Image (tube, rainbow, N blue to C red; front, side, top):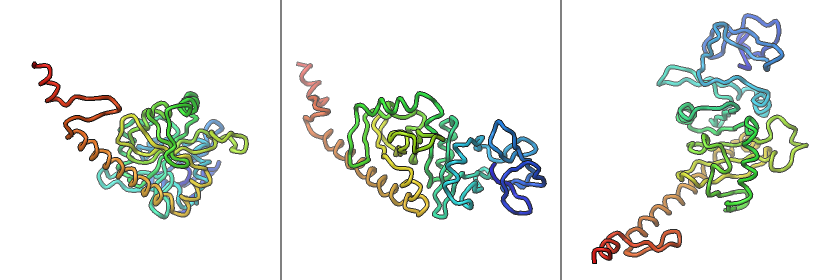
Length: 272
């Protein structure tokens, strides 16, 4: 953890600090201030009170530092399990941001999304060396710009890791990591927000500048904008499904520019 309580005051880990307790469970914690990992607090019994917590990196801290101190590491109770989970960021508007560097199994990802609901993932796209080259290669073909900055792709796994494709909340990919944006090209320093999709293959994502992402989170516009866009996508999906049902009810119809015989006509023809 970044913060522990000393005399009821949130305090960052520093060498020599003692008598600190966990803000969530009240257990004693000790300052870990070595040279291998970023300075942090750890429970004396070595058991973290939040089973979802992952070891923090410089990348985590760099992102957290872009938001107010009082929004960081917010403990939220889970009424079903009795546990408390630590949101990396919870804004005053209720939005939760989870910064994910390490691999996360699908079951835990789903659990977090169901628990936080109004949330967005920010994923470190530099953890695996193949992720950014795949994204760049995917961008060379098979995409349509629906509107400025909004891209539709036919095969989402040509762009993004498969374990992030079936989520219920937006996922923002950061391919810059801890590098300096001033020294990076446009593709690396841009953020890419992957929206939830009903389709097993197609996906829609948005190109977003870091400045816009941070600003809209800070002023509360992020949730409004994303919700409005996702509602629009959902309505388009519903209309497509209705049209598909209408097409299926036609005696003869076309699917993907290929002539298809209705079942009754097909059977009748071959019985002759």
